[in-house]
Image 1 (tube, one colour):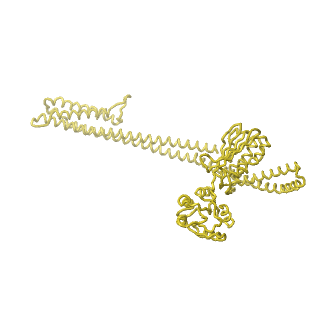
Image 2: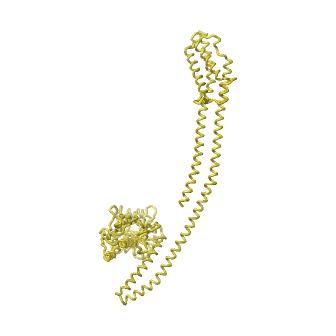
Length: 579
């Protein structure tokens, strides 16, 4: 798979690099084209300005001549001379700009046609511009005294100069158009190359890549199918093996029990019975692990005493540690002597599995079991199991997703207990953490969310109840069931209606649906406890089996719950649990 990803990545990179190069070249060409157009516009503007300046110079020279030869003219001679001088200076500077050369002696802006016009016969525009400028300089030099008729500019030569300047402007414009056309053709070439490159990439990169991906997917699908088939074979084997083991083991157990009834002190028979029970336990472990892996296992929460559950689960390990000459330290906080709603059987099994491993891998030293509420959260059970055994050299090794498991050099048991523990912890929204990781032992920290249950003391005779249920049929079924228990009921369709009734009427118990319009069961229960300040027992009746939702209901103030569909036995059990 990694080879496929690497191959696809490399092909994409080369394709993107090639496209990026062509796009960059096109962008550079466009920028160059814009720069050329800007320069050419400036050149054309200056060349066109030369025509206007030559006409302006001729006009201002004529005005100056008339002013000097007509004393009645009121024109300021000095100002007119300055205007003529400025125009001439600009005209000469523009000419030098257009005919400038670079360091290599080549003209910056003149094409061969323009060079011919400026410097070669018959036009010799450069000489005519110089002659024109010299004539204007002469007019300016003599204008301080008087000008003769012969000092006037030659109108024929001026007209010819204008024609030749027009011709130069036309050539400048043509040169600019030729540059633009050339760059446009180059741009078309790059565009064509880009399209060709895309076609080449499609043919030699993307199509083979698509084929490679399809082949890889087909290979993965084949492996998936083979893995699924292998998994199904394993499941069938475990199911068949479990059945085949249990049948003869039942006969063996019966024979051992019969023999022990005659000779109860026979140590060999006692050992045989112990070994047989171990085999049955291993078969049960495999079957349960298979159920967990399929996702078919579910929590079975009940209300019971938390401290009693933990004490019962760890009791056998004290005697086991004495047999193995290990010190046993046990600390269960008195605050845990409360009723909680959780899967007590699963919690006990988790403690047993972790303690079993602690004892199994500890040859000398001590085993410690500590249980208390988390300091920061009184609804989270904190359990610490520590030992002085081998520890974990390579860290916490028993993750569910691990492909290879290396627990230690011990080969006892099926080595599935810790995996089952993690499945159960995940279902309980609990976490397990390796607190210490050294060769001197291990410390496992559990954090298990709990739902505290406040038991309510009911009157001896329950005669009335409020049913909060938005489904009329469900409400009727519940009401009829309660009538069989001699309990009269009043029905409301939502939480707001329930609050309105409870403001002026009291009941012995409240049956609360969770999912309702206007005000749901969570909000209604919270209002009953916090706003109305009522301690009336609340039994949740819901089709919602999500443990997070049930946990939330207890946090809001519920006392018990039953799931839909229910029967009379469920109702009796719920009412009995409250008394």
